[in-house]
Every structure is written in structure tokens, then in C-alpha cells.
Image (cartoon, rainbow, N blue to C red; front, side):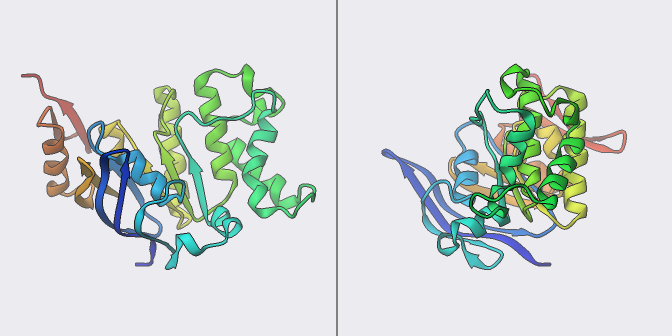
Length: 255
């Protein structure tokens, strides 16, 4: 199985605190991998390092090439990012916001290509935001805005997409839409890495990376019993993972 992303001995300190303490990861192409763990485990920091947004010790490889040596344009074509609390101009239309995802494919001062227009339309349709194409971003609710930013990330058509808390502000039906879109992406052999607080949603992914105190304490399939025990342990056994109605779910444990 081809490897989309590798991390080798990744370490980073923020101030006097060691946030990541020597991370080794191998992410296979065409898989949806979710990073879970308690608050302060280093999940979002790790995702930013994997995206090249934070500089750290160690090495990250994107499709076998050192991320630090890749030309920024090539990296932007191969890796798409959706972060928490993304900043975008409220004065831009939904169409223009999503078209920003096509910048890595456009020549300087060139207009939109047919491929750009098709990619944006497909992303808008997939996120059920096409009818808002002329609306200003500032006129949308937080949940609607999140769907537009997801469309922007999808419009890049990168083989690797990294998402930090992508379900923020999404109501349950649109969380299901997001799950379906992730499955569509992996069916196209695209790789998705997400940080999720919602353990129940994370159990729908192919693989899980479990973090605690800046370390990866487990990586494995989401249906594996060892993965379930690792997740329960880092959350101090306040959740129990059980098989109900044909799905693995996370059940709160009351003491």
C-alpha cells in the first residue's frame, strides 16, 4: 500500500513546553485517518506540522519527498488544509471563497480555466452550498460558513486533505454529509487526515491515531479491539466503545 505521509521523530516545543515528543507516523494513501485524544494531547499541533504550517524538529515526507524541500506551489497542489476558525473575508462571495482553493493551479494573473470552474462547482454541489454561490460569506451562519470552507478545501483537488475539527458548527445531518464526502474522497484514492473531538464519528474512519501528552500511544484500525482499548484508556475510561446496531459507538460511562 502506497504511503501518502510519513513523520519521523517529529518534535516541537512551544515556549518551555514540549508539545510533541518524538512522533513517528506512516499514513497510507487512500485511507481516512483520524487523530483523537484528550485536550492538550498535541493533536492540532501535529496536524499543523504535517501540513507544513509549523516548523518542527524531525522530518515529514509527502509522497516520499521531504515536505520542507517541496516548492510551495507544488505542496499547495498536493496538500489541502482546513483549519479551526479559518479566516476569510466576509466581503467575498461564496463562489470567490471556494475559487481560492484553485489558486495553486492558476498562473499568475490568469483567469479561471474550465477545470477551475468545474472543480468549484463540484465542491459546491458536494457540500450543498451551490445555491449560495452569490451570497457574501459574512451573511452566512457559522455552520454554513464551515461548509463553504470545506468546499474550498475540496476544490483544491489535492490527493491529501488535512482537516482540524471539520465538524465544528455542523448540525447532525451535515455531519453525515461530511462523512459521505470523506468516503467519496477515499474512494478516489485521496487521503484524509482529520482531528476530531467526536470519538463516535472518529470510529467511522479507517484508522485511528491515539495521542496523549505529546506522544502517539497507538495507531491501528478503527475496528480493532486494541484501538478501542487505547481510546478508552486515554479518556480515563470515561467512555466505552461498544458494537451496537452494526456500528462501533462511544458510550459515556458515568461514575
